[in-house]
Length: 152
Image (cartoon, rainbow, N blue to C red; front, side, top):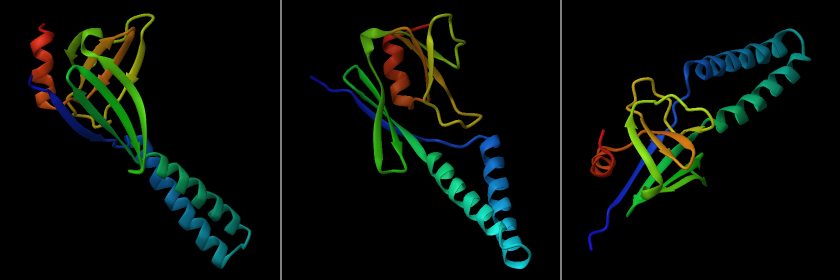
């Protein structure tokens, strides 16, 4: 019997709001640090607080999704800072009711899960299964495998 195995990674890309927040926090930290050096030593507390907050906040944005499809079982794991793995989604192929290109709007009563990179021009597909709508960025091989079972 021939096994079907696909595995691919999708790194998360922060959106424009998060990039702007990062730039503003770094700028405020640098300005507060120089203010503490030249004008008011009390600004050193503000600079340290901004630096620590920014450090932990920016680290929380460093993750990627790992998609694994093995013989009809589809798993998604979130890899945080390349050191911690968290399983976030699992579905068997027979439980998938539809596999559609694009972001299909949510239906009432269905939970939406987004496991995409956040890139604006990324090719996104929608999986409807077990009362959930899941957005993913599949590989070409995975799309071809799914088209065997879910034709439009």
